[in-house]
Length: 29
Image (cartoon, rainbow, N blue to C red; front, top):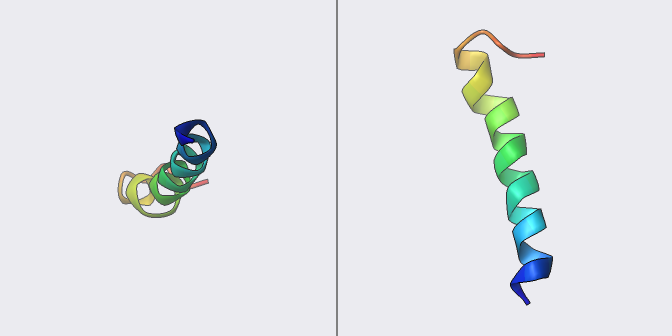
């Protein structure tokens, strides 16, 4: 069950990092 959810959570977290966290450090691409 979690095997189908974890990839989605990982993608969402990765997207949020790229969208909000990294730009604060000036690493936005």
